[in-house]
Length: 425
Image 1 (tube, rainbow, N blue to C red):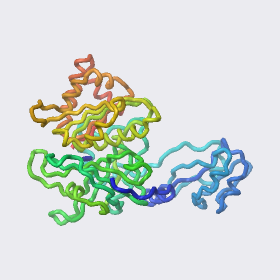
Image 2 (image 1 turned 135 degrees about the horizontal axis):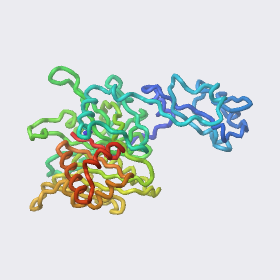
Image 3 (image 1 turned 120 degrees about the vertical axis):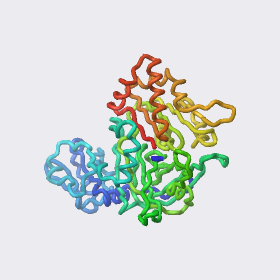
Image 4 (image 1 turned 60 degrees about the horizontal axis):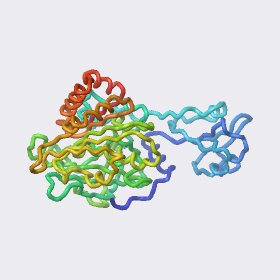
């Protein structure tokens, strides 16, 4: 959807930044905080390449000499030396600028690549995904800064399959896989809610290279295995189109058939809108079907790994599938504490049981849903097949009407405040 095995060793910061710099023309510049520097000269004495100098006002680091060896970090008694800013490689802060500072400049991230410059096929798929809400909306105000389009069709990243695991039982109508990709020493930073592009090998019936296909990342920002340079995808083997006609999905078959150790070409990452909030107390309502669970798993896993920080905020999940054996991550979901994640599962093809869809559960939980709709710190994410979109909106309309709210007013306010994000296909 915008659709483990062992992992490689962690990537050192300097190597990761070198890879990012090569494709984005960004660098990590080492700076000294003039507000807390006590001018003790230990950093200058410790630097093995003489990158640090000073005048009567400030100690400064020469961007063109510094090798990022960190030899100066531990001797510094105040921590003033341990400061970094991402800057344009062509326009770092000069020594003259640094010598004039009374405070460090604010952290600002240069734009990497405009969304308008995305490959045509990626731009089309992205536009289709967000069409139901009138196009992409701004991310939550507290969302982390995303990097986009670091790797292009002309310069893709090479990933290695570290694991390929079935998520559905052998009698399921769909083959859904959890695929772990390892990037080795190639920096490929992603956030929850972003997607990557996969380039299937070969040529199409017209003799042209196959189109890139997008898949939402299913792991949090620190990887499927924390501290390792990898990510995961949730991929369904496509055998029929939305109308039920036989259609073999070229890229989905390619991915589902990959073996551990196989390599593939990856582009991106993409996405600047469908990002989770980061501020304490923020709540998240997630509504998904099938492989639309990928970004929801990433967000949930991010929160789970940080549960000891007691950042607060509710997590509510509405998740639909044909039956339990076809619901991705069903087993792990059942092991999560109810106090952590409010789980609402809808199954439409369970024998001797009435059909149930996510919109039915939204209506059943109307009191809690409207409470979260009113909560300015709650952000709502919808991901799955295009057909679910209207049903979810109608369910919201119904619960609003039942609880004294007007959906015609609520809906535009959600979009204006970056609280509703939709990606459907």
